[in-house]
Amino acid sequence: MSGLSEQEQLEWRLLAEKSTNDDFRRALFVNPPEYYSYFKKEHHTELEIMRWELEQIRSSDVVLLNLDGINDSVGTHIELGYINAINSTQPKTIFVVAFGGNDFKSLHPWIRESIFRHEPTMNAAINYIVDYILL
Image (tube, rainbow, N blue to C red; front, side, top):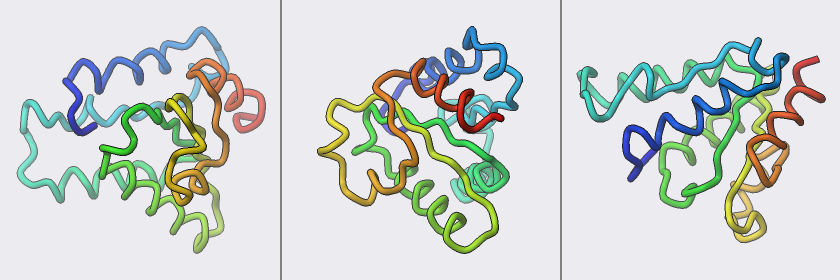
């Protein structure tokens, strides 16, 4: 979320949550900027936010990832590493379904390998999640 306005942080996530796909809307969404805002600064430490977000990820089945601006998002890189650690050491899988990004092939190989599925648009990613993950 680095470098994005509060509205930009929320906008695409709210669009995804309000998707017209009824099967997708039944999923429980966790939209981090709705809980911890870097603009309101109601948190006491950055560790509080980090641990909270990582716990939300650990208890998730799917993470929808917007690749626009990924190279500037240290937090997203840490989250992907955390997901990889869970997926390789725990008896569960957290599916990372990504969309966007100007050139998927130009991403760092570790980022590409952290993504279960990449689609060009958010709607295509949502359709994939509904058709193949939310069974």
